[in-house]
Image (cartoon, rainbow, N blue to C red; front, side, top):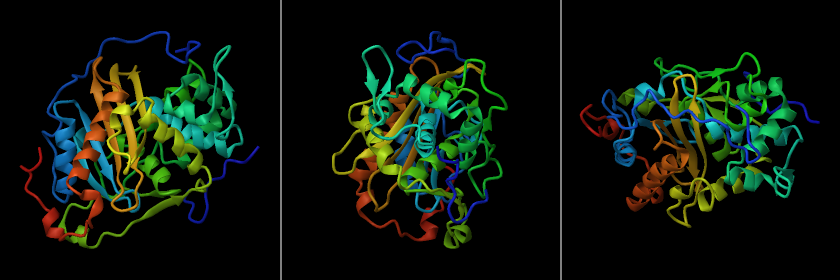
Length: 352
């Protein structure tokens, strides 16, 4: 079995049913499903083309959208900054991305490993990610154990601030002990863990760029934009696992839980949904972490929705898909993003 070592050069270092579903569901929510998610945002320094697409796609939903350049850590827009900078929510099934990478690095699974999830049903990694199978990832978590789950969570930037220059950002949290419902709940539903949209954007960026965990930076002035330099938090030795995790993320969009994100065969979107109830609040959550599989102007788009029954991961994926589609229609992915720093400075009245 492999040791938990992903660092390369710079190393600062409820129960499940047979189908992997919770046996109980909390139906109430203290958070409204619809709200003005842009009310208190400050948009100076943002890429206004991306912001307009994100604001229009989110529409009346109570939620947040974070868009990041995965090859530099540059934050291009944050819709609903108050929510994005808060202490986070349960990651739901998006935690399966971390669990998959940890399981592969520890030799527990690979892309061809068939895991029995029922009397007559077994799944490999691709199908488990695409259909977000809870039993599969619960079994992975049980084999990893609490200590290794926490160790890998730290390596991928969970439980710590994702940014370098956002003083308002609060870090997510990691459980100080295994959850009462069992270790498998940590890697299937993210129980005992809270993450922010920024932390999920960092994690997805590692997959998009083959292993570099950047500090997220959010330049807000002409000077900061003109002198922007990417800063690496740590490099992770995961490039050899990325080709095994991508087919599942692509399958989620093509035929799985994130079908609403699919908008073009030429610029495929890869992603992972998350749907659950954060029992601390309680609040229904819909997550989607994604990136488009191109090199020029590649983006990581994270959507978090909070509220009632209408909130879920598939809805969040549809919002992300609309963002990609809008930007594609505007030829955003086919042209250079080199524009004057002054063009990025806006009045606060814009794009709300």
